[in-house]
Length: 318
Image (tube, rainbow, N blue to C red; front, top):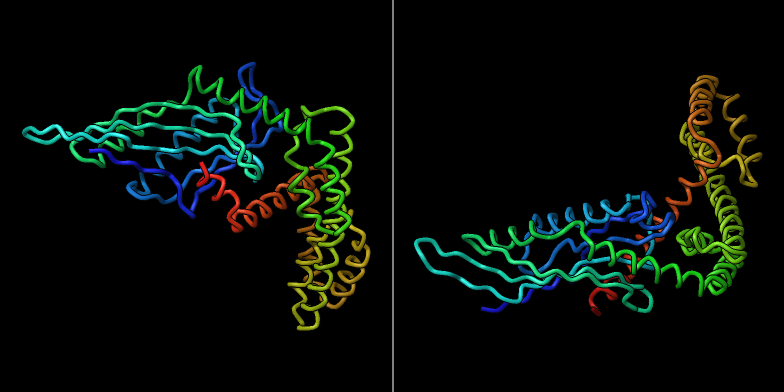
């Protein structure tokens, strides 16, 4: 009996990994690939999907990938296909499955495949479910083939960024001019440091420009929110909003004046807020705060783009 199961649905569980160099066999620092594992699919239980996810997490971890990055530009995802299902009759029937597992690295926008890893697996058990579980347990998480697969993807992705560096810069410039700062940050942040050269330097300058624009735009929005809270006599909420405004944003001085006005009216709130503010300053530097906020922007943009279905379509097309 032949049966086929493909991992392709509209609901996907995603894990995101920041590729970091740990040794000569590891991938280069600052290269983003999003690991995408389907959440639901016909024929497999949620638990079985979770096991596939765990295997992939272990695999990428073995080659220097840790969970920090988000990008909708490049993804790595699995395809699990049962191409043969036999039942050996006896005192208790034994189910034997022949499975083909493919791991695919793809550019989302164009659908171009950058690297493929293939593994044939056999699973057996006293039920179809047991046989699937056993086949998943046979998935490799390290080896020469996997190393070559990831290295090939890395080489091609770096070449993509080098070849398209100017185009990405121009596209981001348009976004910044249109005050689409979040999109510009999400576009430029994944560009790896290994691209190097003058183009990489100007991309970093444009990223800084986009971040500054994002800070100022966010500051203006928060200032309006704080004033709305004050009008409703929610001074504590207003203070929390004002405290979140970055010191490097253009409207920070206006926020501080408004904050001081509130604190004069409520001395106890002033004392509490002063303690909280000093604690934040001690724990988080400007550089750390910038990195954290950029990652939050990139994550939000990734989630937004996922809702538009582009990544799902890229996987289904394979």
